Length: 120
Length: 112
Image 1 (cartoon, helix red, strand yellow):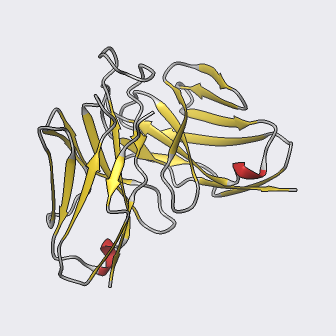
Image 2 (cartoon, chains in turn purple, cyan):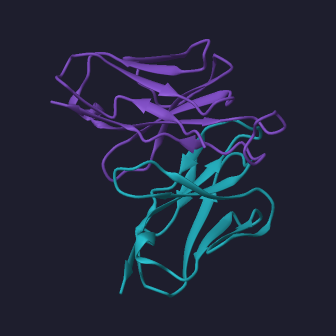
């Protein structure tokens, strides 16, 4: 079965540079979530989109922005990178229960493999 | 605020049974999820509970008591490959497709 795709898988940037992370959700999934996971930490929610509109906002810094496009893929744009931004960035996707194509009717979030961002 | 507690580390023997507990205090509740995560990899969905009781999926079972704010994940017939972190996560808003709040994870080591 198709899974969530993220690119790039690894990214190395210098301080104050910008980065763009991409996420391609499972086909027919309508909601995309972004999470940040620092070393030894639990995933922290950043932002989510439902049907191309922002639906929830978590601890996303003002230096970051995100959007979901007409083909449902999403991009996380990060500017003025800081050392503390070094982390794993996961994208997850889900589909509302009751809609065609749902996997199990529970709106379960399925995670992509992540992008490991290292800021030097 | 949101608070999800689970033990930091556990060790169990290959072939044995282990129970990982999770307690939560959240402003809302619309389901509790368990994920497995190997180091540096993505969380992988294991189980979901929204009603009280036990859900069984092969070697894995998960239990929920909403009145107690408590869940556990039960792993049977432990294998070495089960060594991983196990994350308890709660959907704290009373609707679907909302973010998850994660616990800090329990690192399980399975020894021979």
